[in-house]
Image (cartoon, rainbow, N blue to C red; front, side):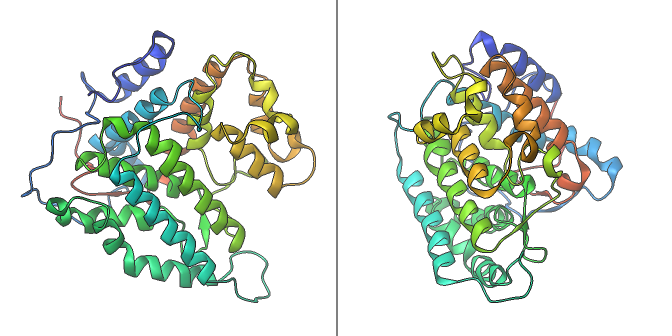
Amino acid sequence: MKYLAHRSSSASTLVNMAETEHHSGSSPEFDTPPIPVCQNFMVPKKEISMVPDMGKWKRSQAYADYMGFILTLNEGVKGKKLTCEYKVSETIEKLLALLGTLDRWIDETPPEDQPSRFGNKAYRTWYAKLDQEAEGLVAAVIPEDKAAAAPEIAVYLKEAVGNSTRIDYGTGHEAAFAIFLCCLCKIGALRVDDQLAIIFKVFDRYLEVMRKLQKTYRMEPAGSQGVWGLDDFQFLPFIWGSSQFVDHPTLEPKHFIDEKVVNENHQDYMFLECIKFINEMKTGPFAEHSNQLWNISAVPTWSKVNQGLIRMYKAECLEKFPVIQHFKFGSLISIQPVKP
């Protein structure tokens, strides 16, 4: 199945834009042919060391695959609730168990008493455990005949939970988790019919664990733009969450700033889960602490919100050197240019 296949005409502009940016006539595959067992997996490394290298990233197979993955999932969740019915495969169950382990380790690693309010050093103890166990955790999720991919894929899991030196977390770490999931699709561990569970089960559980990390260890937002950014920590759940609302019969963008609406509907919609977390963590008028989201609430339709957020994500995250310089590339997420 093509990354951008099975789309509705309402998203054609978005898809055309994505396909143009891929510099490729056809889009990459979601349900990729199984990778030969003899493939040379490699430990991913940084490739974008200077601003001029950004062109290499934009032309890469990695960029095309990543955007294709994000947009395919965006189409898949359109108009669907978190509580809808969908298939939960064995791999999805294994990923949930992995995230459950990370969650348990937080409980086992309480924050330290320290003078500084932010960046609790106990996070480093928690992270060291993941650093040590990541390959084993990944090996338990992937098929035995793909065991050689574990060291490569484990790098993205370790990158997905924040930075242990700075004790911060931001959209680059969130992107690493999406890349981790994309890699699992590429080796055939996740398949086309896992799409809904990837977001509604796995990514949603990942967000829960990240919020717990952020709260427990008082993590700093990485590269935060303060009130002018969309959110201190996340971006993708706003994209996919706005897609869930497309063509909703009653809830419009203007409603998400109403706390009553949020409290009554957050179990069904990822976007509202994000707003609920912001409301819990921040005080004062919403328009002041979350100005960008306040502005978005004035957009007339969810379809326009969704398309606007995808453009914003490209501009504010994927085209920003301070974010992309930390990305790592290997055999599965390749810096090589898209094949013509």
